[in-house]
Image (cartoon, rainbow, N blue to C red; front, top):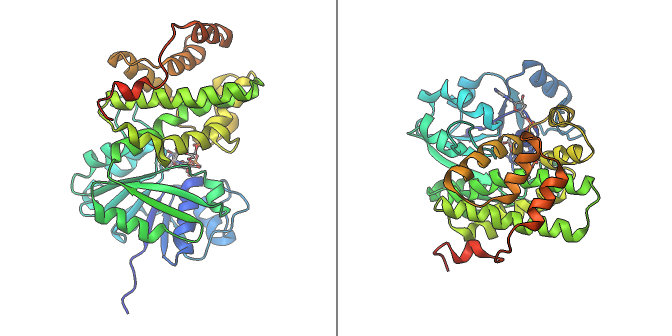
Length: 341
Ligand SMILES: NC(=O)C1=CN([C@@H]2O[C@H](COP(=O)(O)OP(=O)(O)OC[C@H]3O[C@@H](n4cnc5c(N)ncnc54)[C@H](O)[C@@H]3O)[C@@H](O)[C@H]2O)C=CC1
Ligand SMILES: O=C(CO)COP(=O)(O)O
């Protein structure tokens, strides 16, 4: 019997660890690459990630490794769970090894200067690779603790979607397929910004009406932006759109929500981010999104409001006053202007 090649997961953080464990649970041999040799050694010895997902046992099928060229060479399917700020630089060094491989981005961010999504960076770095993204309401700790969870794999490459479904589907994890890679990936990146706002609202003791208004108007705003980029608004009604928006805006387990909550408690942005000690992609996404919306003249009052508080010295009360007094608008305007029915 031929032995299956190991599957690679790049990234030693919460999500890489959760996905590596899921794959191992389904009987696959997994190489989880991380840059920190001490962390890899600790996982080999204690079967637990010393820094992320504490208390979760890492299954024997997961091997923590630090040799990236060997990890890439040994796998035809590679999941990338690196922060958006690191993805390009880590993979560009090994571009010549990536031809023909299936690369699936788990990263929910946008590159600072270029405004590129992670799969677009992968395409640039590895033009000969087969590319997909995985996105949905997927809090790492809940996946690791076997909460029933669903996600979306998106790619124009149907065989890639089928392979990802085959390796990840399990007792507690369901994978839906989509051909709208752009919409699925954009949804995952944009919702992080609104989770910061939602966390802030909770810290400030705002009511349930307010939370519902925020989430719903956030969906309108992110869909409006996506439509301006040529995306299909229907994707935003799926798991990777409204699904991920709901979980990230309602859960104290979300790191972006935690940053917002800390801001609402009165911490500075710098202190909020350093208290977290993990990646909160929404902070960078906010900066690039505000600039892009302005350039494209897309109306995004929540993004503009959060940006004004964090980077332009406005107070929360000033921003709330502006938002509530803005001229009356129609409710689901983003659908009627899109050209989609
Ligand atoms: N944690 C979650 O619940 C989910 C996270 N994601 C996304 O996955 C991506 C990664 O997030 P997490 O694993 O949660 O982050 P994390 O903060 O838990 O871990 C980040 C990991 O990346 C490593 N890293 C940072 N810079 C690096 C570099 N230059 N080279 C190599 N490794 C580097 C860190 O050492 C750490 O192991 C983010 O884009 C996030 O939005 C997506 C879905 C769920
Ligand atoms: O993307 C996530 C859930 O789907 C995780 O969100 P945070 O990065 O805010 O923890």
